[in-house]
Length: 103
Image 1 (cartoon, rainbow, N blue to C red):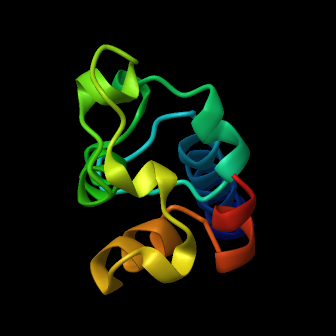
Image 2: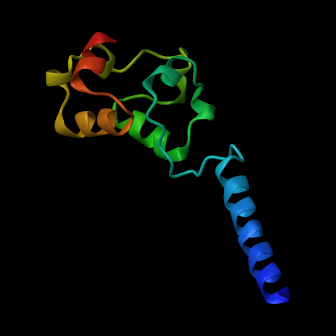
């Protein structure tokens, strides 16, 4: 009986630990969020390093993102005008041809 209780407690603690990590709100530096609606409101410092790197492939940096410098050329391009690296970065950020072209 004690062994079953110990197993149940270990299982409960494991679930609690997993649930706590999944809901802690912390984002790993390598994570990339793909909800394109969030990009309108996100500040450069709100992004993970991976997200900043992807936006960097599209020509963005902290100054251009925050409106303190000129926007990159990719901002005025349609999907088919983006090069392969730019399309890959945009895709990783959650964009499709349709969503990119409507922006």
